[in-house]
Structure formats: structure tokens, C-alpha cells
Image (tube, rainbow, N blue to C red):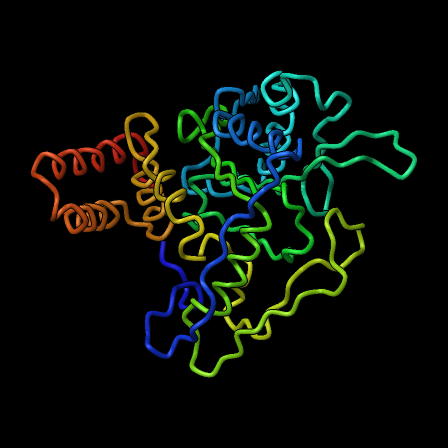
Length: 321
């Protein structure tokens, strides 16, 4: 799971100096949307308890599991919206937002809006959520979506939410959501641009500029331009927020530590990735044990034995590719 050169911080003395990294916006405590957003963050943090998906997935080859990210991604996001609407009592206990419901919208930012219809000037929007699903066994080993929205198009209370998920039996079963990543959408956009301009590793002399669209504003129309554009992006990495060091690192690492059937997601991922890259199962086993011995060399003997036992258990469960 290595990022391209364009996705790492430049630690060299030639990296341009700039302003400090942005912080999440300070919200007006007297604005009712501030309390609403705070409650939604709590509900989203416990989303796994409310996530319901009754379809059972079976018959997918282990080496084809990564395709589920495309096949079920939209359904996962739809389930999140349904769960939020079902948990109204938690985010609106005082009935301050009666008449407002979460709705998805296609091909527009943000993916989800909390709105009330029927107003003469159009829907009354309380806040928006840019919502993304991340299948934890996808090939990239990290969220692969691009978030290029300019900061000016993000309202102060808008959120960026990434929901990691997996199948409860790893190779089959029903989708299960894990704790999501929840941050201010405007902050994520500002941090992404700061990283691109001042912190990433780029060729000496490369133009690090970012062009913002004119007249961008929150809750834009379908045809309005709201995407920031890098002056130069040879690696096509602008907007890959999972590669912005300091933005999602801790979330990705914590998600990799989740255990399914007693084995870490990271170990499942490594094993499946080796099987997808090599046809010879014996070579896969040798390579997996070699990598495990290398990564556990600094751990205790007990940890090393547990890791190697997990590798053998993976082999017994999945068999030859």
C-alpha cells in the first residue's frame, strides 16, 4: 500500500515554506446548525450499530472481492442515508428540525443534503454531507475517491464522511459498517490545497498552484463549476485525500486494525493481494511468511507466533487461488 511519489510529503530543504496547515472552522455556538452538526457527528460515530443491509453476498471469488467496492458502493451510501433518517430522535431530540430529511442527490456536491421542501425559493438546506463508502478489501488498501471541491463551495457546517465496510464473513455475508471518518468538508478541502501547494513531494520547479473556480458558493446548481484545478498534476493525484499525509492517516490505520473472524483486516488484505498478484499458491505462502517475519521482527516472540499462525489460518480458509 505505497502511495506514488506525488502523494508524499517533501521532507527536503527545497520544499516551499508556507502558512501553517489550516484548522477546522470555528462554528458559531448560537447557530442551531452547530448543535445539529455536533449531534450528527455523535450519531455517525456509532453508525455501525444502526447499519442494516439484508442482502447476502455469496459466490464471489476471493481474488475478485475488490470489485464489490464498485458493485455495492452506492447501496452502502444509500443505507447510511436511511440510517440517519431512522435515527432522527438522536440528532433532533427537541424537534427543532421537523420537516427536514436527508436525501441523496446524483452527480452533485454534496452527495447528501438535510433539507426541507416546499419553500417558495426552493428547498431549505440545513447542511450537507459528502458521503463516500470504502470497501476495506479494495485493491488500493485505502479510500480511492477524489475530493476536488473548492473550499468556497462547502458551507461551514458541511461534513465529509467516509464509511469503511466489509462482509461479516469476509468472503461472503452481509455488509457491516465500521466507524466512519467525519470531518469538516471545508477544512478537508483547505487542507488538501495546503498540502498540494506547500507539503507534497514534487519535482523541483514544479508549479504547485491551485486554481479555484470563480463565484463558487455552497449548494451549487448541477452545471456550476466547483472543482479546484492544479496547475500541474503529472501523477493525477490531486484530490486523492487518502494520500494527503496528516488528513486520514490515523483513520486508515485504525480501520486496518479491525478484526474480522479473529484476523486483522490488514492481514486479510495482504493475503488477498498476494493471491491476486501471483498464481502459484506455494509462492504466495513463502512470500507471505517472508513479509510477516520482516514486519514482526521487532515484536515479541508471542506476537510473531500469532502473526504466522494467522497466515497459516488464512491459507486453510481460502485454499489455492
